[in-house]
Amino acid sequence: MIPVPSSSELERIVVVSPHFDDAVQGAGYLLAGHPGSTVVTVFGGRPPAYPDPPSEWDALGGFRAGDDVVALRRDEDAAALEVLGAEHVWLDFADHQYLDASTRPTPEGVAPVLLDALDQLAPTAVFAPFGLANPDHDVTHQATRRLMEERPDWAWFCYEDAGYCHLPGLLAWRIAGLFRSGRWPTPAILPVEVDQDRKRRALECYRSQIPPLRADHRLDERLAAPAPEQHWRIGPPPAGWEGLADLPG
Image (cartoon, rainbow, N blue to C red):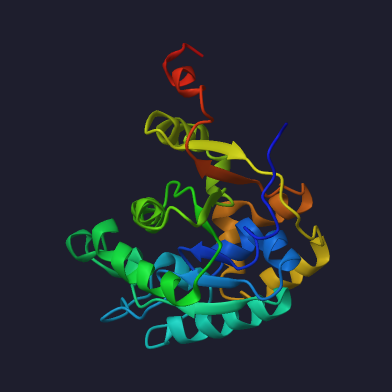
């Protein structure tokens, strides 16, 4: 019989989000269907200094030199999550666009801070991004994978990074890597609230993100499709199925 998550597993859901908008884009229906869930945004902190002139992404969002980008985006995030009935926790790591490669957060540095935040929330299920394309998404994914061994009693899932999962081959590449590592990603059957208008209202709260998401991530086309949300359980292979990993596809 095809397994489905139990109600006890989904009692306290935490969605780990790289940036302020990622959880709503990739798991908005999940959040809407489970009011009281919490979103932990990893790259939710201010940088040591904003670039002058602003980065291309921030400039598309209407920001000018001297603006406190993170302050506004935190306000947007709180408003968006309120639409979905979710709570927020913001970690203080800065977005990679503001940092030199040598000073960007690493999975090893993020993992213990993220674990502390999760422990305080005591989740029964954690949903993390697959971590595709964007460096911050990859760091978030890799940090979360380290925690799977630390907290094996939690139910672990990945959600597809909206926009990035449509880049050719990237989602398959990540799933294949998880499979080879002994963590079997399996599409999960989850109770959600598929309310397109509500999700759109939540996304519209990210006013400064809408222009660059339209320009670079096909936001309007994805919402019109509509591109579905899919969540994958990350767990060990079923007993007796371990040899499947060694068979040719």
